[in-house]
Length: 272
Ligand SMILES: Cc1cc2nc3c(=O)[nH]c(=O)nc-3n(C[C@H](O)[C@H](O)[C@H](O)COP(=O)(O)OP(=O)(O)OC[C@H]3O[C@@H](n4cnc5c(N)ncnc54)[C@H](O)[C@@H]3O)c2cc1C
Image 1 (cartoon, rainbow, N blue to C red):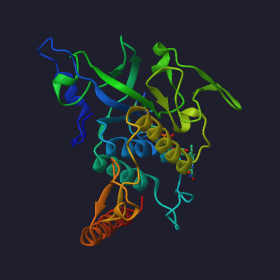
Image 2: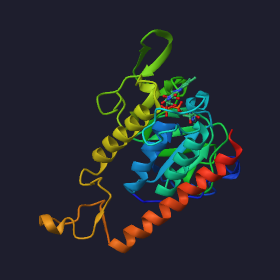
Image 3: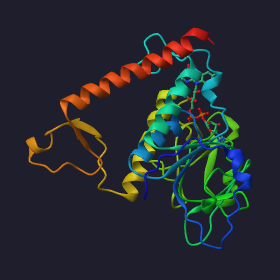
């Protein structure tokens, strides 16, 4: 598993990305299909755990239909939905996710494991990661899209009718987001959660933690603690945790203030 430092890739570049050799194509660790609250939240956790993570989205989160987001904890006066999504996207990228603006049109399951994604606009960047015909190999898949899951049909994933909507099929998952297909997880709106962004973001994080735990059970998700914290309890610093000094903590607090000011002054000016 590798952590990555992607630039935001340009999906249209993928059309030239023929793999000139017959070398087997290395799969990426996780593809997240959907870049709304659930997908972006999942991406933050997955990338932070060192999994090479690519988020696919075609820029149409349901949240963009909301007039003003006023029930997401942490924003007492509410927040413009597009500002919220911009911040969430930047957060996922800062954590190490690649974000690809492209529609996933089909998913197939080759032998012995993993998945092959087909994408409307091809794939970005590194030609060694594609087979040259607009497909990408991935080891694990997290679906956090809308409830239109036609693209999953070739996999035989179990679905059911959403309560009260006999025209909408949602994906069957267990308590932790696993589907009936090994390696395929689902979260958020597509699994019939409550239709609220904070619930869907929380569910994305929950299912990402399930996936991380299934792959690397030793990974610990407390992230950043003050220097010496674990020594006080006679414990080694767990895998995935970082201890930081007082000075480093002050520097991070300063940077976070500066960053948040930028978002709100930029977006605040235009209003819409
Ligand atoms: C009119 C309206 C008002 C609302 N108001 C509120 C509110 O006030 N507060 C609140 O908390 N919630 C509100 N919601 C609900 C909120 O929008 C959803 O709960 C939330 O957006 C669901 O998050 P999600 O990440 O599961 O899905 P979404 O936000 O819908 O994200 C789905 C993502 O999947 C991507 N996608 C879908 N199919 C594909 C594909 N084949 N390939 C690639 N990408 C794909 C989309 O581009 C998108 O990025 C409102 C919804 C509506 C319709």
